[in-house]
Image (cartoon, rainbow, N blue to C red; front, side, top):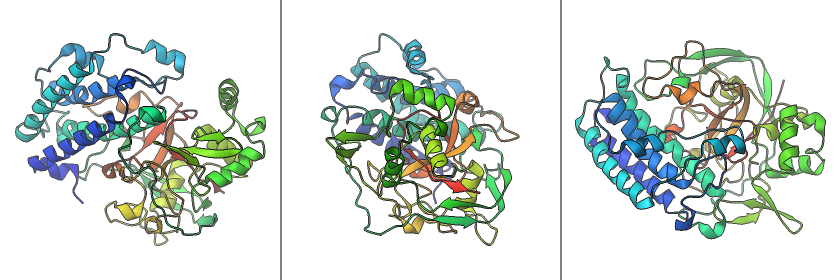
Length: 444
């Protein structure tokens, strides 16, 4: 498997990776119509214009100006596009709203100028220097490329909320899944250890919240073989799950009552039928597709079913543990992530039926642990013991160690292959409905 670090010694490969990331970004920005450029399809996020400027500006700010101490291109734009927002609600989001966004031609010209400088830097400049914390292990150069991959997923969440008439499809509308018949069941996982995080002995790139290694003992539990499906969740909706106050925390009740939530965000009605709001079209609700829900909805369903949402350590035990006691790099083993392992890597726009990738099963036979939707855990996002902020992006994790975000594991259909690693941790607020997140339940 070719890693980021191996690309540091092969500068042409590093530039190739950067160009590949930029090409995909440009293809994503070709999806929304021109008149949507300054809109905020998700009120809690900036408009499209911000993200098209933010991606090159972040690299200039982090690598060129921060790590290498060189001048930028346009100080005004590099301040304007410096950082996104993660507001608690729309009122807080309004406070972070900028005014006087530049024209798209100005943003694109800035991006071209940044590309020229960045490519030259990646080819010719010193990117590793142990005496410079931002360049230690090539941190800044590797972080800025991975940052772009993550924002490509964020852009898909935002694009999902744009009306169909204002989007131009650029990928398969639906993934062709197998006709494999699957039956939900609970798989017993014996007690043992789970290794979260990673250490400093590898040359691969990791974010600060992935360090250091954190070994936890996990008691025996049973876990669902597949993610909860739309059909299974439909039973919860039909049973009045959204009106049973005993199933919801006080915060979750306030949310569903204030927003009038009565079904998952990606479901919509067409007459008497439920439909799935895909990225580029709505179609009949796939009964065996994984349901996409918030953490609050996942927790309520689990309570209704007499179970609970797994912890981060339980996910690790089910995904990477083995009956022999060793732990795998991935659920399927140590082979690099590939198309037959799961629905990730931008190979499809929407989720597919659960059980479509038996080759991705863990040693215990648990399936779809990576791809088809991030998986909620019940673990609040917090640092591992011994955590230290990364020099090149010190607020990447620390601003979110607030008890208001929960860890997600796995990957979604639009997660890049190089983000598919055992230690990677995603996190979101428990009532954020826009991300591609599913879940499965466990029982003690």
